[in-house]
Length: 379
Ligand SMILES: [Zn+2]
Image 1 (spheres, rainbow, N blue to C red):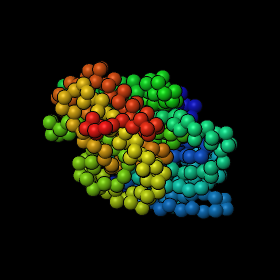
Image 2 (cartoon, helix red, strand yellow):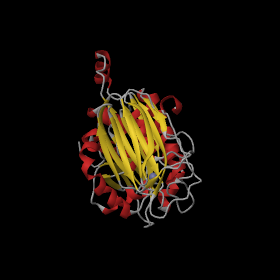
Image 3 (cartoon, protein in one colour):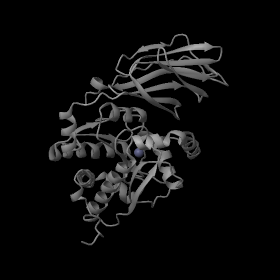
Image 4 (cartoon, protein in one colour):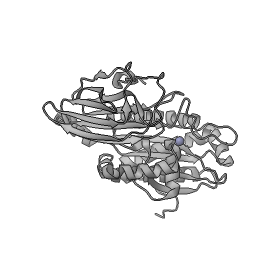
């Protein structure tokens, strides 16, 4: 995958700075961009209180990070120069405040939220949409889904869950994602982009940024489940929403690499922008996609395997889905922590069956008349 073509990745790091006991140190700014969307991430070594502000003449957003220090050797001005942002800069505003300014060009709206471990502030900036030429709109309406981003969970230093016999989630999901990608490309002539096609680490916020910058029509994140209960088994598919279901929250906390407590705090922090996020990621459509994929996985696997438990369609706040601007889901394809399901996940045939089932689910979503039926649906 030629990520460099679309993904501009800037990382400024200061590893030599020891953090102050009661404050934070600014670590750098990263961004990914396309013509009408830019995700900017501010890395700070500890959680900070910050304010957000929007000013005109010239139009800019600024964020004041309280009790925060900007190390001298960090580059503080980053030219972006796309349609939305001229650039990003940071400065020590006063003794204990770092001010980050985004200089705007063709701005419409923005969302800001924080992710934890490591702590980072994510700012999604949306530009004004230029009306698409009529031919493009027409083409889009007729053919529906043209581009799908598939996201194999974890990778590199992040192994994901590990099975009792030592199987890595990151390896299983990469295999399934690649097989699914091939199927969608060949059978459905859909353009497929994988967030990773090898064993490398990619931060969760970058995966969403890839889907948004590439203007994907669908985003599918693939994972294997894990539970301290060794006998937990089955298949479930998620879309993004606030939840008070503790099990769903636990799954999201694990996939977000944060504690359940942080998960609860994050839910309350996100409350104010959740409606906007849900609208942007087309929640209704995400739910439909999730249910097509879930039903297809369950019915396909039941034809070949016993004891396939349908845990259903659920929702929770997964970092990787937050800010996604298209129908987006996260599939937990089986429990790697369950010895029998780990055995199945080790088997190539099982992985291919899952990929086929997800492909069928996507097809069912695109062509509603061919919606995959649950095997208990009587015709
Ligand atoms: Zn996972």
